[in-house]
Length: 92
Image (cartoon, rainbow, N blue to C red):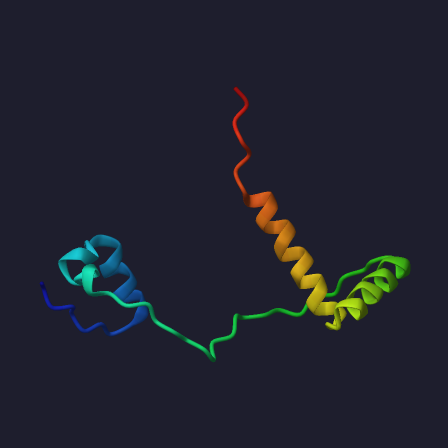
């Protein structure tokens, strides 16, 4: 295995890995899964206009599940995004 060089910046490191094969520097057979229990994804606050009736229905559903309505909305969005990103089956 080659030694990984020291980098002066993230840009320098990014350029290095874009032009080098990591298998020359890392024995991937010895890799272990890293755990980051306190890592939180970056979030961005947005303003969303929805009909009052839709908000009330969302709050009702969230109350039934005993979760905040914003959390339920994120769950619904994540499920739909995953569904939309799934490849469609090819028609024969």
